Amino acid sequence: MIAAAPSSFELQGEFAGFFRDIFGKRRMVLRINGEEVFLKIPKALRRELEDQIRPGQPVAVAGTETLDLERGRDTRTVLQVTVAGEKGCITCPIQVCAKKHCWRAGGKELYRELERKITEAGLQDTVKLKAVDCLDDCKHGPNVEIAGTEFRRCTPRDADRILAQLTGYPM
Image (cartoon, rainbow, N blue to C red):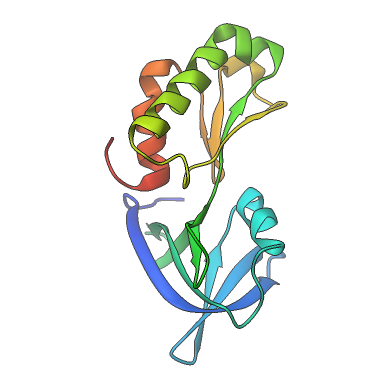
């Protein structure tokens, strides 16, 4: 896939539900001015939302948009959702591999640096950080994943780049 550099997007509408597209992929559907907009949503974020959001609720979503130059269409990936009337927003978590190899190779220090940067930026109520069992790429650890985007051989110096991927803003 040949794609242009990703840009940020924000949309507001009514949550219509999660549906499968013609390829069997789960998508978040928003109704905006009578039209349905299908958005890619990472599995971890979808699972968090399934218990907290109901069809018909007004929501605001933000994420990244990438133009697929071969197909000539945009792909929008949701990274955070704000439900009307709720405090704060629900974001896709930053997953840091805590399996033995990654953790010993610097994952523990990376996790602590991400934690520090999140607190320093005042994002602790918005950005979720999770230590997960394994991201299945031990040879290239320490590994981090956000919304399906993998970061390999990470060090604490990569914390700003990882947070910028999630928030869409340079840290």
